Amino acid sequence: MFEYILFDLDGTLTDPKIGITSSVQYALRAFGIDEPNLDKLEPFIGPPLADSFMEFYGFTPEQANQAIEKYRERFDGQGIYENELYEGIDKMLFALKEKKKILAIASSKPTPLVLRVLEHFDIRQYFDYIVGSELDGRRSKKEEVVAEALRLMLPASFDVQEKKERVAMVGDRKFDIEGAKAFGLTSIGVSFGYASEGELEAAGADYIVDTVSELKELLL
Image (cartoon, rainbow, N blue to C red; front, side, top):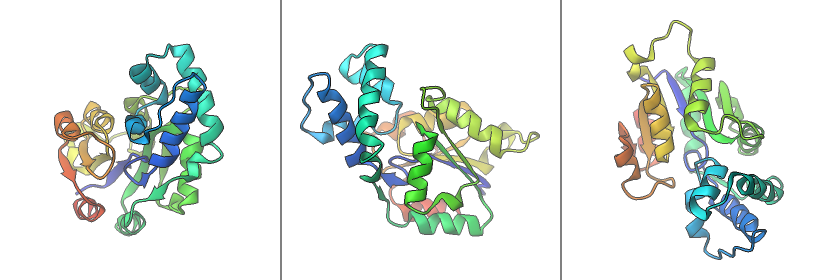
């Protein structure tokens, strides 16, 4: 069925809650905002950070960029490792590569940080292509990330519109589903990530799975 599979990273392959939300909390403190409840910062997991600071706290673009700099002060050295690989992900990736699937990461996280996470969890070797955003904020939208991943992984003659059943995007937020739909890919939502209730359904995911085991079965 699926030959080419794109994966989101945060909330899909790993659970980065503590690292991301604690680093957002650290950045907010620099602006005099105290948010003691990390659960309230879960919406920051997935979308571009600048968008989240502007949407949830009314920051200007300039303030959002300053907040990202503060966020990275904590995240780059500490928060990046406050992260866990979802149980069974490594075995699933191994099984997919045994079946000769072409795998890619399509994440809004900056590419250097994506690489560090993959190497930390020893799953870098399973991915043929790794695409994230740029550290200066370029290519942060999911559609832009997906476009670059498809450019790298698909043969020039491949017509996605005719072969939707062969290319899938897997993610835990509406942004992943929207990114898949923008290019006619099969969209697979994972409910064990950080989507709000009904978010994946509202985004129109083609499939929604509740466990890593279900995801493995679907992809194989």
